[in-house]
Length: 243
Image 1 (tube, rainbow, N blue to C red):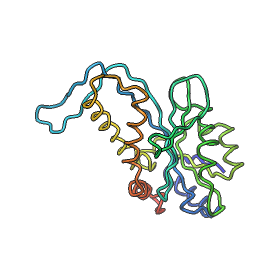
Image 2: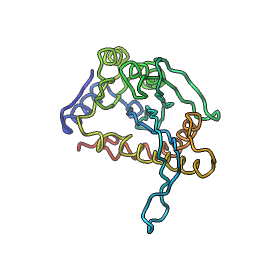
Image 3: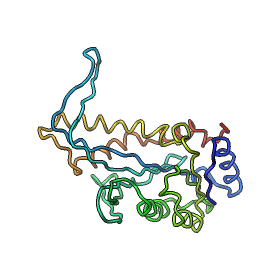
Image 4: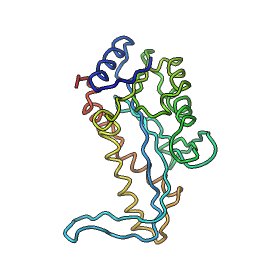
């Protein structure tokens, strides 16, 4: 069953109906989304701010290449290994474990953003094998309405593996999506990691080899159980409250 409500009330109606019908437990409620990061490729490092501002932010001008992070969290605070989407020609997923403590998956697309093939790879390789329900009941995956999440192959796979798919109504992710409300904001930690990196290095280009560990450290600060549970509560997804 896949749903794409047209408004916020119907989003909560559909969610309440499917969770009741399929006896979906809180540990089986998941949210996933993508966020793009610009690599800090700086020709110069400048501080641009008012002379009265305290703790100014370092600006990083220059050539910027984008990498997309696909993040997945559960209402109980669980976190799947992230999927990083890098710019390239292939459509495969590989794995790497930075510092032996924070595994990640990697995929390639021609733009560095997600697409239909990468979206399906994430669903089949990253999400489905790692979210099997301990209750034996279907899982609920709440996700935005990006075209890569609404292909026939994506929806068919969800139906085959008893993944109930619910898309946010158009233009509603800012108040409704836990990752937007409580996680991607704290991922501003990445900017602080880049600032610290810029102060500690004499060379001025942040390579992909530098980027991934910086982003992983920012993830570890943002993706705490407390932050994740607070994000689900703030969006009224869990504990469930009709908006």
